[in-house]
Length: 248
Length: 181
Image (tube, rainbow over all chains, first blue to last red; front, side):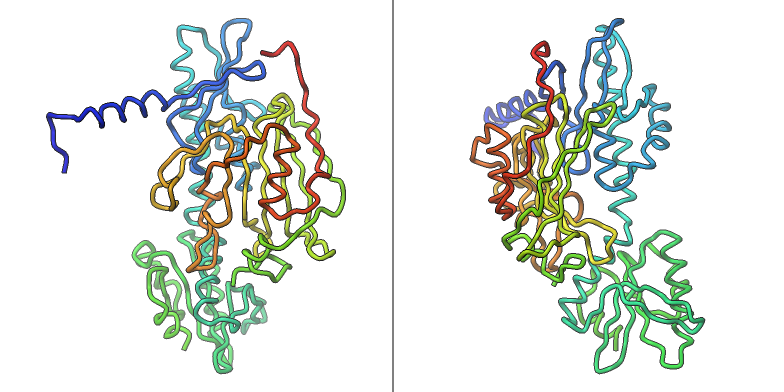
């Protein structure tokens, strides 16, 4: 409960100490760096670099956003996304850095603008890379299946469909000689479509395997769950018995 | 059991097993713009090179003796995504690292760790699901050793990552400019 009106000395001192430490400054190797109280998704601080230029100052993110994006394997799309965000923020995108030029009067605003654009660029890529990543979901599914089925799990198995198309599925689990295909399905249309097509192809085999889609959240997929027919669907939060039942 | 691509070895075992670097690696030419330079080398286990298991180092041409990262990672079973196992950040210019309050446990949960810190395997491992935590090793802890030089840094990383000949990693081609403050 929040009690208004009085703040203890202890809380006041702690808040002041934290506030003073929110922004850090470093002068090193000919450049000035300011660490801001905003975090990139990986937990490092959004940081800007200040260089002196002929007409004033240049504030840049020193390429940190680019390196963050590169780190999650998305560097190729950096310029396209960064240009869009930079234009809206009134800053520029160089070879790798997001930057703007200003003078001492506008230095503070330059820092805000570059930092915000840098963070937004990384956040845009991060969402895509980690929040709805089918590969990530696949890893989680396989980890879960290994705890339930042990060595009966074949990860990334190839299964031949009725159309003679070879499908690489997230996992193939064989219990008592009966196969069950588990496929991780994210909310992306491509992921749903691929699973839907594979399931239909595999379901028309003479000895069709059980077909199970693994999703983060059934509610988030909503009516699109029907596209995964004739497969069964389990979600991340469900206990192991549901996975056993789905594979049976 | 979570395994790395090709290695058929659990992630924990990959971390804990003694490893070596098969040849003297070299740093890349610094990138235009930010001077970023990298070094990536596959690691050997028991005399066999595991190409999916790598040590990657990053540094900046004009930032001698600071802002260096060493990371141990392995290709996942799908052969496409790299699973990060451990990372050591030395004198990072990005203000240290802030640990998530929910995802990171232990005494450094919800706290900021200094510019030199270790994203250790144990802090980022989900034992019940036998997998790494989502993201780029989201949890870090400070280290007690002072690490005053690149040699001390690599020596420490060698002990953390269990790489027995890490001293063959040369320092980056840093530019020491006496006119820069």
